[in-house]
Amino acid sequence: MASSANSNPVPKLYKSVIEDVINEVRELFLDEGVDEQVLLELKTLWENKLLQSKAVEGFHTEEQAALQAAQQQQQQQQQQQQQQVQQVQQVQQVTQQAQTQQVILPPQQQQAPQQQVIVQDSKILQHMSATGMSAAATAATLALPTGVTPYQQLITSQGQILQVVRAPNGAQYIIQQPQQQILLQQQMQPGGVQAPVIQQVCSIRQVLAPLQGGLPQQTGVIIQPQQIVLASGNKVQGNTQVMQAAAMAAQAGQAATAQVQQVQQAQGAAAPQAQPQQQAQPQGQPQTQAQQPPMMLQVDGTGDTSSEEDEDEEEEYDEDDDEEKDKDGGEDGQVEEEPLNSGDDVSDEEDQELFDTENVVVCQYDKIHRSKNKWKFHLKDGIMNLNGRDYVFSKAIGDAEW
Amino acid sequence: MAYQLYRNTTLGNSLQESLDELIQTQQITPQLALQVLLQFDKAINTALANRVRNRVNFRGSLNTYRFCDNVWTFVLNDVEFREVTELVKVDKVKIVACDGKSRNYK
Image (cartoon, rainbow over all chains, first blue to last red; front, side, top):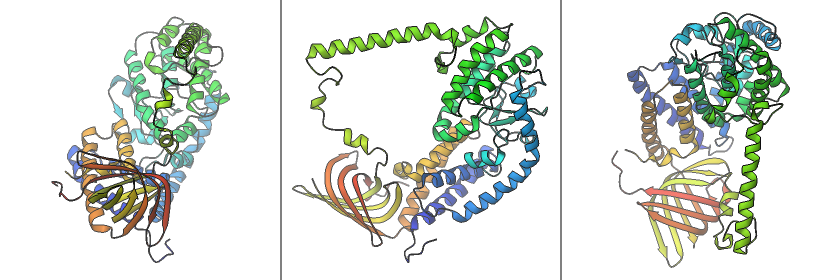
């Protein structure tokens, strides 16, 4: 680890802070009735994020090894399920052909739409397994806590699913990020039987938005071509439709690279493709799509028949905006494309350029002194992030000229 | 309450992000997350005051200064941070400093 005499105090400090916090809040967690598992998950998430930030050197190397060992054990457990995973992959590729229900959510939970559980029942955990991507990859990429590995977790009755789900009936599905699900679901549902599903599914996007922000690459990896269909499950019709849509989505998804945008494309592709096939739902689809304002409807994509009107409208709007801007620029006698009075601005661009590593020092001041334009700083108890790395100090003294 | 100053650090932000994830997945309540953050504030304040014992010097040019609500905010340019062990140079740094004299009511 530290070869120099003065070892970096930061990792130890952070470690001790984490330990202190976790131990202190353990009681709070218990008072709230939250499982210890969640506390461990918090700790793991926290440590992993610190690792990922690379702001600290040599952070938790020992624990990393322990985590990896634990993950390997889990991988071994999941190897047994990998056979099923392969089967699932094949199934996904051939979802067109009528197969058993590809129900993501167990019908049980659907009856209780408010169940949004991640690690509730041990049964669910048992049923859950990583599909598609190897469980190890999933665990690694997602840095999942040891206790709650790719038996993921975010499964709500409505399908607020983040990752991989396996229905108790043996079928395994990978749940995708919200948008796709929503489209698929809406296509599926013949009527308003599962209106609550749609609504809740819509919220997935909000749920996943921060997560996606936090794990941009990882979500991409997870999604891949494997796509999930949220099905009502109770109705056979719904299932077949789901399967068809899943097939469409799977095909479309496989063609695309694994990222959210492509997922959206798959949605777009799946939507029109599913339309002709699904006889029972010609009406629901365009309506539902139009009724999804909060869902960031994917307008582009292959053969998106229903969105032609939207595209035209958007183009018109853009043109109008451009024309207006040009007019305003011309009237003021300034360069057309420059924002008005841009020459008067104090240059803030420098701030933006360095936005990547905004070197920040958070601390407390003992004394700030100024003489003419000579400033002296007496600071203490500070944490610095300079050039991407973290430093700490108990005292800092500085000089600057204004 | 201890200063919430340290929440916008690598350590603090990673904690907040982790808590947000747990909230999104409904494993904890926002109220509980807030309690955790308050506990973090205490822990980091204590740790910095007691467990860190090093000193840093720095020199640069002052670009802006602000004193509002007893909080100093500086932006310095071309700064060198010097510790016994190493030297770090940055083009721009922002320093946010809360009052260290008044023992905030813990």
